[in-house]
Image 1: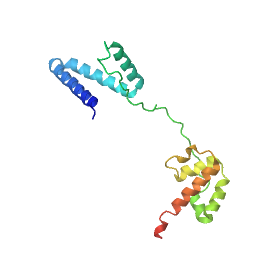
Image 2: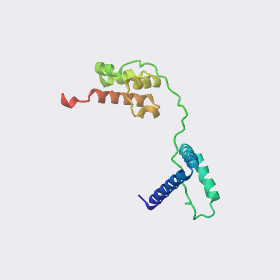
Image 3: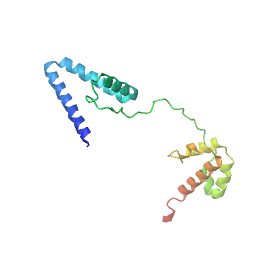
Image 4: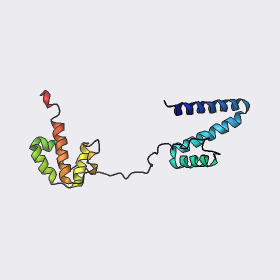
Length: 163
């Protein structure tokens, strides 16, 4: 822990102690200050814009630069919670594992090369071949076909060392 971290922790504990002392003298005022502080902290965590504006206001009101640290770090920005467009997939036109068992890798490649890119993505989605979303950026049907054949081969040959 750095000296700045230790200094800030001491300051936070001192503020907590002052709030506890105020609670003894005037509990209502202590509750108001604690509630207001909680609301400000929650909003600063949610909105980096609010945290930045808060830091700007405080730095503008400070009598000198020695009173407050020059940089107040805003909390890390969270992703906007905009709803993503959900892609509804059609059922796969073929089962790549069955085709691989019947015709081998060459037969599977031939059957997959007849399909368009959306049908290939339907197969990937239905068979859950891409758990890491590796194919989402791939645009070429030949690249996706080769990737599907590779994944099916790897899955079918898994454990063959023990046979």
